[in-house]
Amino acid sequence: MASDRKYRHRGYMESDSDYGDSERRERRPRGPRPPIDVTGPRLPRMVQTVAAARCYNCAVTLPPGTDFKGNCPKCGVALHCCKQCAYFEPSLRFQCAKPIRQRIGSKDKPNDCEFFETRVTVARDTTSVASSPVSKAPAPQNPKAAREAFDNLFKK
Image (cartoon, rainbow, N blue to C red; front, side, top):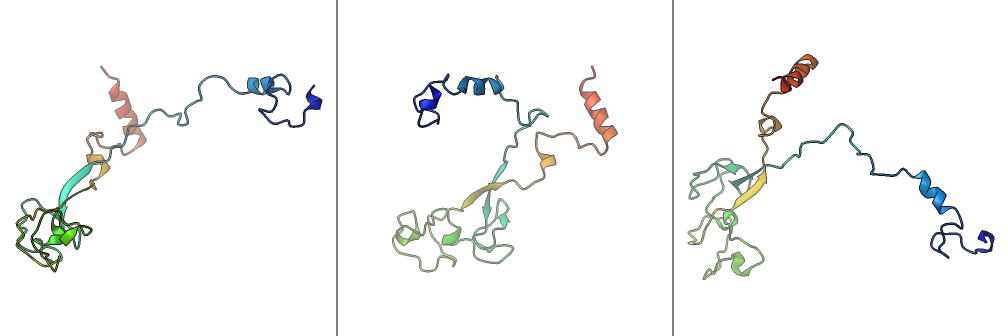
């Protein structure tokens, strides 16, 4: 009966016994797939974030308590300006999310806007991985120290 078929691909006149699908299925391993990494589970690497005010011009992190009436400590641009404000939005009317009465011409010059609020950005923490809360012990320097650290885990 298999010889009277015009097309031999799967699904045409569906029948498993016609052309050996049952034998193909038996060759596949049964059960769950083995894990890709056989060394065991890894600890998740959570991305640590830091919220900080940064200069709009040079992106240096400004320390808490910075006087925004002054200038940037690195590049010297004015910090109390529209580009440093949290409400600065170039696509809105007068480029501000607050209802200001008149447009401020130069967005990078100091001004006395009553709605000024410092823009705070959220960025990745760039400190070393060793200072993360997951790894509290220092890394072993040689194989013997690593073996001792492993054995100390199971001592009573």
